[in-house]
Amino acid sequence: MVAEESYLVVSLILFLIGSIGVLARRNLLVVLMAIELMLNAANLSVAAFARSLGVVDGQVVVFFVIAVGAA
Image (cartoon, rainbow, N blue to C red):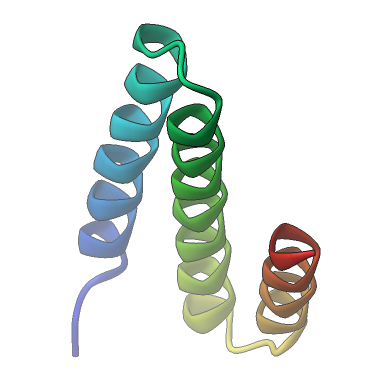
């Protein structure tokens, strides 16, 4: 089983890459993809915490965030 810290480190790296993409680029499409990357990083951390606590509520929140991001 993978430790929760590993998920959080990957989430942090993805969030930093997304924030650098938002701050450094001027192309709208690249900025939107970077924002989506930041949302996915937040989703990964929420899902990791939900898994460690043993609740399904976090996975439901992740599903709705992905649905809103796709819309």
